[in-house]
Image 1 (cartoon, rainbow, N blue to C red):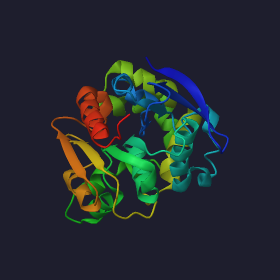
Image 2: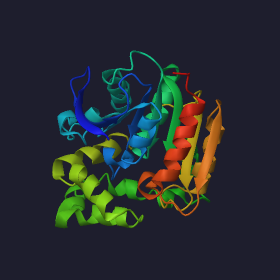
Image 3: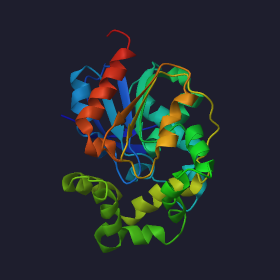
Image 4: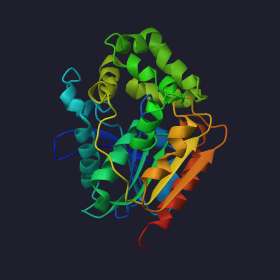
Length: 288
């Protein structure tokens, strides 16, 4: 069973995290995306832990009350700081400088791409759900004949100052409907809203978008063994961006398409996604 702890990093933030598995096991760091929280990984943690891995799933910067710098200063949510958080959380989790396995969904996937791009030597494997490689995403957005720009139109709404209050009014009705619209169960929604459904948290979460309007970061080809999982019913990520991701990975690469699954993969198809992630991690693990 997972335990909820506070992880304090070198920079002084204390991240709320669910942890499971043997303390000495190889580290698997799992990063959630927007509209969700550490609870995304509720079904993955016991499976990975049973396989001998030390699993750490934090509420990320701004989602954790103890790691929530002022979102009015957007520099607090710059992409390099989000990437550095991942490395510092790994260090606080006892990685001892060893390579670790990184798993990310949505914005957590974007951060994961950033870690793999800048620090490939730190990773044993990379697993990304929903979020395409940033260069594939940018290429799809720039295609005048494609539909990715339409699919990503909500990004612009997130930049508007009235969006935060609007999302949490009426018991966070719009946040809840956004998850309901992707067939996420009520119990999962309540877990995510317990983290995100307040003014301070939502403003911090939106600061990720506001500080990184251009899908920030300088990216090249990824040199880490990579698994990319995409649901073909994803309303926000189209097939061009998803299927183009392999063009930007020069290490071992596998793409898995989940039929009928939307954007919130771990809330919609957790068993299948966990099975794929575990197989990928095992394939790229040293014996222990």
